Length: 438
Ligand code: GDP
Ligand code: GDP
Image (cartoon, rainbow, N blue to C red; front, side, top):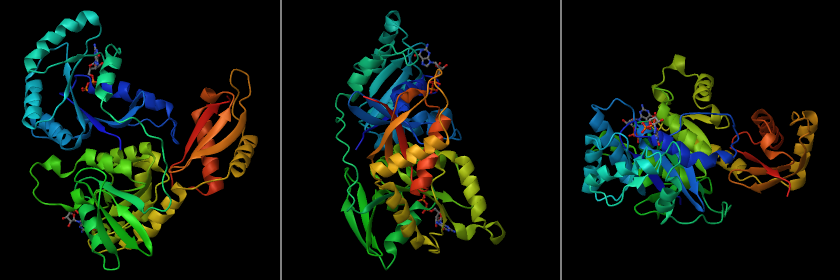
């Protein structure tokens, strides 16, 4: 499982600049909705043969906290709870601030080790500014320029030194239970749903130790099939809310998305889609999970507003990049349609692990490119020589072409849609990569 690195620090120190630099290599990986830009606070990062999830904690908390200081504190508390590595970013141009001191104190009090990154050191001659930061009591402040890249590779080496190397992608074992994660903002009804699912009489439930310390998964049998609900302990364990942000850990949600095949993104149907839902769903999409939007609390929606089509349109507007995710309206409270989740999970999963033959795929691509040709690249024709499925979960197709970098995203989208249509893959993410002929 990939480790999670959290960036913490006061606003304006350069966290989002650093986030962009660290996740940049990811842009090379082709998504099935190219050209989609959105607000991103979680991303996949990679340095040589190490991969990790990067979280910019500055981004995902709303600004409605009582004060600036409590807002910052809240971020750190969240990061502390679940991040594997913490990077405290400070501003080398403006020097130490009170907030930096507070953050360091908080990190220390929790016994959390962290890297202290002094940003805006735009070159060697600015390194003198580092000296100030020894006053924070950190052993080794790292100089860096998120904007210009100075010190970047040295820091990445240090940050990733202890991380596990990427293993071979083993894919999904088809025999195992479908792995399902339940995510969504606080109060959407996650624990109500889990408790109902686990409480249904027709289901045989057992607890299984998760892959990480103190994570517990629940194995549910329904209709002769098995489903593994991931990280259910954290969701079921309710009460004792010490801080309101601790109730819902975005990092925990990211970690369970990392392990799932199908994500249930829970929404409060009475309230509609929120930014936080869209962000977590966005990560699910980046990660390539199958997704189902589950609109909970349908019992609270007044009869004249019970319009599933409308609900789907609203979700489609907010989360365009998840156009393939089906929508189900349920009530965890009354149990309405809850068991309908299972056939829907099956459908998404079936598509998610689809394996298509090379000959079939090549016919699809030949037909598609014959019907609509890609536009010329510098006056030359773009040709597709060969296509193959390189992976499933999610289905990933590699197309060998003479100009892999010249294919316009709209043409790529066309090809993705053609593949979807021809294979009936309307509920799963799919990926298309272009490769040069070797
Ligand atoms: P955040 O609020 O911590 O996410 O900070 P941002 O990434 O938005 O950066 C705040 C400001 O600092 C922006 O104007 C950036 O252009 C600037 N900045 C970020 N990194 C650097 C850097 O390495 N050097 C300099 N000189 N400016 C930077
Ligand atoms: P979580 O924070 O996402 O785990 O949400 P909870 O499961 O704790 O639910 C938050 C609140 O919504 C609780 O008061 C639940 O009783 C209530 N709730 C959850 N599901 C439903 C539902 O389907 N209908 C109604 N009316 N209330 C619900």
